[in-house]
Length: 280
Image 1 (cartoon, rainbow, N blue to C red):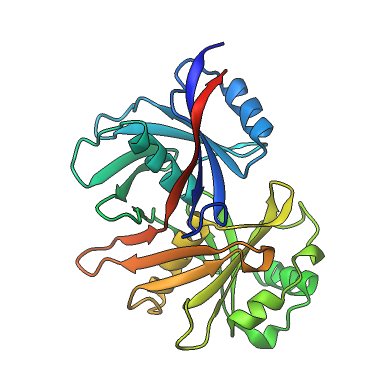
Image 2 (cartoon, rainbow, N blue to C red):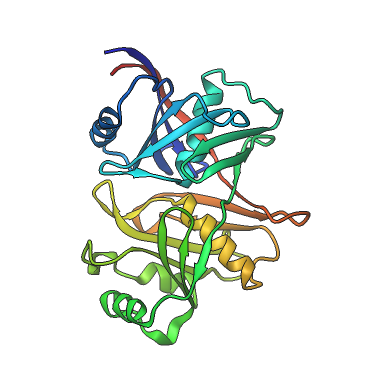
C-alpha cells in the first residue's frame, strides 16, 4: 500500500453537496486496473477518477474514469472535478488559462479563466433514434407521443437515447421508476422552462447511478445535447440547464457556444469538500 492524495469534490452546483459527487485519487501511479475498479466500487459514487502522468505530451495529465462497475471513456462531471482537484493539488497547466486533460476520447480542453470551469464538449455522433427504441421508451415511461418534440441517439463516449418534450414540467412529471434495467440504454429527457425562469431547460438522465434511478447531474449528456441542439439550429445563445430537481439536487450546467469556432463550452461550479490522504 502507498499513501496517496485523495480529494472528494462536488460538481455542477452553486451549493456544495447539491451537485454530483466525485472521488479523485490524485496520484494513481502504480495502481492496477483491478485496484482502480475495486476502489471505485468501494467509494460507491457515480464516478471515481485516477490521475496519472499523460501519454500525450500536449496534455497536462491523464485521467481514468470508473463507475462502480466499469471504466468510461469520458464523463462530464469527472472532467471538471478532476481538473479542479489537479489544480488544488498544485498542478500547473502548460498554457495559462487552459488545462488539457487526456482521457479515453482524446484531449479535452478545460477553460479555467473563470471560477466556473468549462470543458469543450467532445465530438458527438448524432443519429436518428430507431422507431423500435422510441416506442419502447414511450411505452415504458408512459409518455404520450404527442408531447415529443425531437428525438435522437447521441454518442460522445457514452451512448444516449434522448427525447425533447414540450416543457420542463412534462420532463419532471416522468416517473423514472417505470424503467426496468438493463433493458434500455441511458435515457435523456429535456424540456424548456417558461421564459423568464431561472433556467432555460430541465434535463434528466435516467439510468442506474449509485443506487439511484437517475443521475444527479450529467455533464456528458448535456454536452451531447448541446451538439444536437446546435446541429438543429436550436442553440443560438448561452443557456442554463437545471438537472437533479426530481431527486432534490440543485444541478446547474451552463452551455456556451463559441461563436468564433466550432467549440461548445460546458461549465459548472466545483467545490472541494474533502482533502486528505488515503492508503491504497
